Length: 154
Length: 348
Image 1 (tube, rainbow over the protein chains, first blue to last red):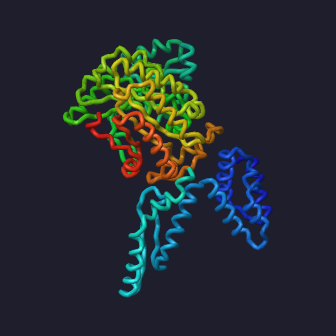
Image 2: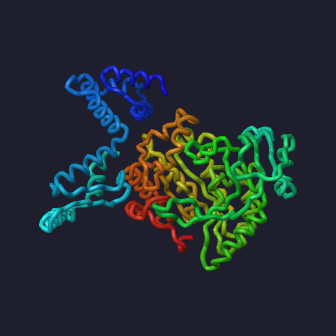
């Protein structure tokens, strides 16, 4: 492992984040790849990020929460287009206000236009409500719209 | 010859006894006469016990022609691969051959049997035209630097009426092809990338302009040429970079002598990522926004691929409406979306 990245990981540990082997591997990969792509040193990947700096100093957050948030921010920086598309997709689903018994899942990484719909119900009335709610899906091409949401960004 | 050996990094020849007396073996022995030679009874495909630096001269056993190992979940262009060996000294950073990084270069010299195999394969469906290429596991012209395969293959394979034989390369060395009788049934294809990508990730190959000039010479010799923008690589300035390559192509080549243009974005098995990282630590290839596709290969996130293909197709269509443009290992919907087509029998 890269010494610079290792020293960044120990800084994270000093702020109360406990890292197991898998966390270390994932964070190492994210930090070294962002650093390589952006031409900045590993320490700057964290230190130059205001959001990360603030959350590491936030005493209201426990270690696991901090870790989760740091990782989310780094994933967002490493995969910006995908992260934006995923957020756009979630936004569009939320806006539809579907029945809470419905679960919508796109193909991993939006590699095709397919949507998987799962739902449950306990009575004929419940089924009718779910089906009524599902009708909202025929007015929107979810994947296409999510991917086009930020077409200008690449 | 010393230069050639240095370039190919060959320091020993290992010959399987069953091919020891074949004409190509004799040529190889003459070319590399001052290198140590070992004759062995049988060479197994796993190549256990051999090392890089050894040139393995072997007999191809089993089927020599196979379906292109495309990707079942994406659209395939119905291509067949003639396997002349495995290994390449061009050493492009993204090449799947790095999976076999501790293996030597192996070549199959029982060409009469390989040619007979192709002939028999094509005769099974005489009304269908088969596209068969030799550039999957080797660089088709790179191989000729060891022993001139194509001077035998071109005149022989071009006798097969329903075969279109494709020679795929990043080499400019075409002199030996120009006078061959190709009967219009051989397409010589170049993989193209902007020069900055060649410098960065294909540093041991010939330059972009040399490849295009070689293609022009082949067109003058009556060959049709193919062009593969594959792998397209996303980098700062990619749009201008690929547009310039397209412009260079059409200012140097005749569009009516281009058989096809394929576009394919960078993709590789996840297992190759640590290998690229270790072998080419300065390479930015793995730093793109690569996600696992339906085939589990890492590839650029779909909107990035779509944009890259759309820009390239638009630029190509600015120059010509007639040359078929297809996508390699992508789905039909994406191809339609960016204005590419599915390559069909009528196109070639």
